[in-house]
Length: 459
Ligand code: URA
Image (cartoon, rainbow, N blue to C red):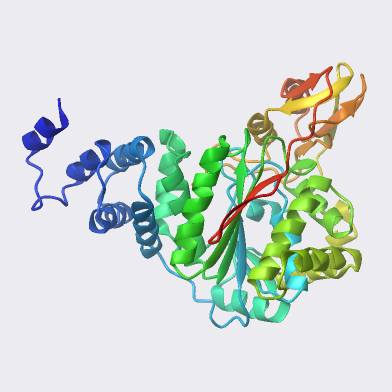
């Protein structure tokens, strides 16, 4: 049926514009939705008045037809309105938040919060749990014995004022629409849509009350954005939304064509975070922490240039102040601070299986998403929301694209509590790592910086 006939048939008019089906059909034909229509749908769905099947239809229409920046901004604001907004005004200084769009071995947040706080910029961080193949900061933190991530806002503010940093689980009362919509997107093939990702991330950032936002937009085969142009578009959209709402927002587009750090899991990522603060750990991970940390110090008005910021972050690793701050944050949240010296206090897996290179050559590619899924298969992440995760399991994968490896070299280690699963994972992992005879260059780590001034190429 032609669109005009269809609209005539349904007699869509201004009077019945709030009709749920009309809104779905408007988007299906690529028409613009007004702020009122978007808000009607989002609030109706959040209150349970619009069923999942109609929301799913709208999400799929948005997936195919997209949204203008204005529609995406209205969608974001409407999502913010669906829940509480945190007031952090009692925290002194410019509060800076950092957010990753989701990756594998993305152990940036833990050391970064400590390093930025150690330099006096307050970080009141609300984080989430793992989503799909990507890990979540809150799950990682929960491997620290006794650490509390469910802290009420009053105590959270007190800790940030006293210690300068805290990381808690995002309250269920924030952005109620996102929780419901994300769960639906996960099962309707509508996660990878720019307006839907932008509104999901930015609504949470706006509701959680910080003054400035540094976004780490992952691009590559382990990210939600597998295309560099889409990653640029997503970054621009989020930077525009943040700045238009008075929150200085900068995005970095960084590589996720291989796991970022050297380990994938929960307790082992905490361990890698501490290694970073001690001056060792994955080189690529340290590099990103320095760049994003420096940007946080700049947006927090601690430094004037990013170069000065990098210098301060490096100094806080060298002089141990970042590590001391990490321990202080852990202890302020009731966690066992001795983990920074004694890794055996973290959950340990029973079995280890080595993954041996079948021949010599160069690592030329990695199936990053599948590697994240393999860690989940071991128990490091969830397949269903209710799943309980095993904090001790994971994958140690210190090789990177471009590395030369010998035949029979151990290129990875599987940590498992189940012998059969561990053996199976070690066999499956080898198929997820490409080895080539030809020399391969290491891919760039940081592609672009996107800010209100424009886009800057960094590779
Ligand atoms: N992270 C989010 O919070 N939302 C998305 O849609 C994707 C990544």
